[in-house]
Length: 501
Ligand code: SIN
Image (cartoon, rainbow, N blue to C red; front, side, top):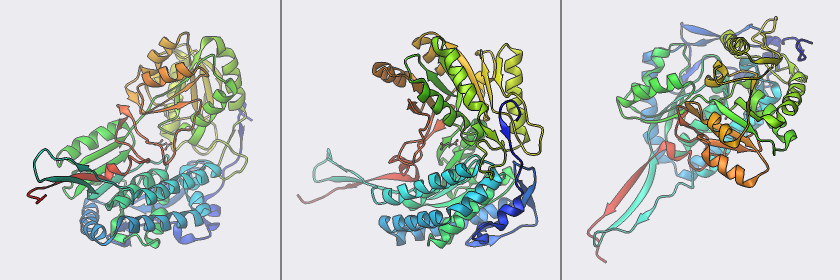
């Protein structure tokens, strides 16, 4: 035991990989122009729970990206012309089924490269598959309009058509779900995709894509360019054959991609950083609020962009809330995700550990109280003790920056007005949470929070049917839901004149 959080030993990669039922799902090649390709240049992937090297993966250059884009461009035209919307839905349905059939292997690969607990990894595979299932159905629900014309003998209608080839750039925190949340609507709409998965966690993407091709999705419509060469990957934002770019990741990289994409006026969706407020009013059900804080804060070891980055708690319930949260945090078990007793995995790498340490050290130096945790764990892997700080104020780094780790900083507030002001005092606007049993307050505060998504009396807001996306510096565009398909379509208006009525 250390700082109240129990610890377990790491698990080796080789054991895990040898247990895959279908070993061919563990792939280190890229998938370009319908073929699995390797390169002399490679980058290494590590298990964040043990620091062990897992693999060396093909690192593609700009020419490879150009080849993939050209091939995806030709393929897209053919794919859209030769499929009906329900037929595309059927392909996606088959892909969904194959993922569910291979759930255990996919979760093993995900757990190995990302570090999240095996239960969470399985949960992510199901979450990832849910987007495919959702868009398999949405594919056929892509309606246009008929519009009364102001001109005589004229009829106007609209149709939704695929935008074209889509560049997809995804993060390591959800190596599977962030792929499917973008790729499923793109394929449903009749687009083709060129994916650049994260270099920390490329294997989940490659396994998912293998199953997509096995499901019958035309090989050239789904291409994967693994690389560590960031310059080469910018081809997705500049190449004129790419019509749309969808990115999940940091605000800085998102802005850079948006700037590059302006050169060819691509359609752009950006799901960027967050700094979610988690407001607990004194009329809330405290058990629900604490449970939600645990789910929301410590999911994926705090490495989600919708994590509760700032816990704002009304002064009257501060001691009770803090004590209940600390007790739950102390009950977490930290270690390798493959250990079934573990409830909290590692961070992605050493710089993630350094960042959370910096936030904790800064807060304590400026007067915050360390309730539990507070330091990296002295063992192999990228571990930081789950941490609670109280007495946190807006002068501290945790108030303005996304920590992206297992740190719950508690701020105190007195009035509803103050809570809303504190919550909105950030450049970000992705998720926000509030806990109250007062219906009027719920409507009032949900209305006033400057966020794209609000959780009321729940810490779980992510689902395939819910529009996911932010405002302010958290980006634009919506993923999942009935709106997610539109991001991969263009609306065409057809005016038919000269009709004999
Ligand atoms: C993210 O952190 O980027 C996504 C989280 C989610 O889908 O819930």
